[in-house]
Amino acid sequence: MAISLSTTFPSHTTFHPTKHPYHHSSSNIHSVSFSLLPNSVNRTINRSSPQDSKIAVSAVSGSSGIAASEVSEDTTSLLDRVEVFNLNGHGIPISDLWKERKAIVAFARHFGCVLCRKRADYLAAKKDIMDAAGVALVLIGPGSVDQAKAFSEQTKFKGEVYADPSYSSYEALRFVSGVSTTFTPGAGLKIIEAYMEGYRQDWKLSFEKDTRTRGGWQQGGIIVAGPGKSNISYIQKDKEAGDDPAIEDILQACCS
Image 1 (cartoon, rainbow, N blue to C red):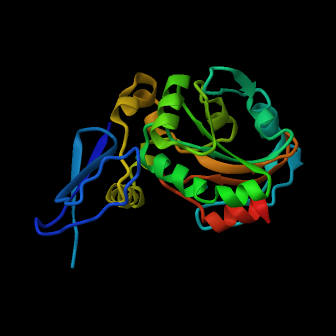
Image 2 (tube, rainbow, N blue to C red):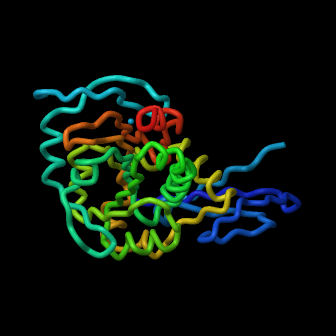
């Protein structure tokens, strides 16, 4: 199942999307078509005039920044066995990314996702604050090294990019997945907003087999972790596509 959403505007309406070096955009838009995965159901929207022994966590957040709960030792043990791959294809344990440093680690839905491209910019815009605090910025996507390379080249992302072909980190962190978390009214509106700002889905990456059959329904999240393998001080588990937490919550967890 896949859903295509579109929004149609009066012919006299003119928008001026934000320009991004890796996006196409038009200065005169009459119709914007987009989707998380292509085809089958169309909607038109007319424009009107996130128990075992526990390791303490300082905040577990939804997009509203609600503090709660803990991360289990079982989760951190599972993460210690997860391998991710850098852009050269070199595999490392994911926990090595924060073993000796603090890091913000963003987990993308998949490398072609338009909302993930916007999230990458949203985080990178505060990289000067992260750098000043000695905090690394990392993005992980479920997919191949080649997909990760394409994402990095297209977005010019200022942080580190890694691929998780097995989706093991997503399973260890229990990030949600499913059609009902992907196609929501809130996600649809966020896609409209992203397209109007000039962001675009990469359909070639989105149509690749593993993304199409599995990754298209996967949601991601954000953690702040380290130094120390078991030190996860903040976790946001996206409840739906585009469920970005407030940047102030992330900066407070990483850099205050």
